[in-house]
Image 1 (cartoon, rainbow, N blue to C red):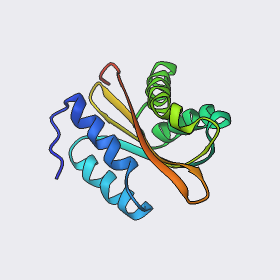
Image 2 (image 1 turned 180 degrees about the horizontal axis):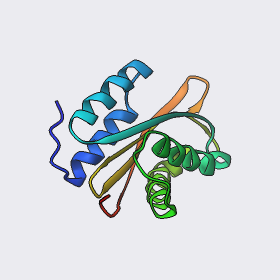
Image 3 (image 1 turned 45 degrees about the vertical axis):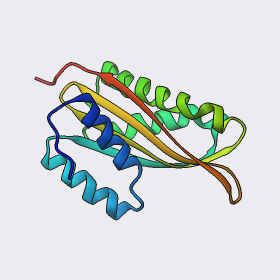
Image 4 (image 1 turned 45 degrees about the horizontal axis):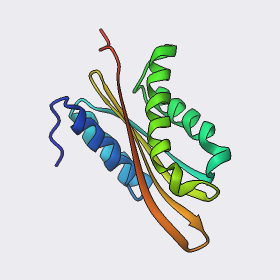
Length: 143
């Protein structure tokens, strides 16, 4: 069970665990559990060629965060999620260049801390590598 105190490591852990959920049902259970701990969370599946899809993955992270009320409508909050998503993707880029990726993007927020995690299989056919990337940013508390 995840205990949350608002620490950036705990928010990052929540994003990683959400990105690693195996099904939509597991994802829904995890989001409900996180909500009970005052963590807003969202996730989105993604698959495609890595290089041509980076901006689409960033966009999907921002849209999912807005849809699930993890962030508001301000361009500042959108930029926080976009920056964290780009950081997470940059951490997997050396393995993913020129290959296909498939997996999930998890977004979590508690107070000022926002974390985005990507959990992907990378490769061709059944010759896959597995990787994870994490980005963190802070945002002013909603008040």
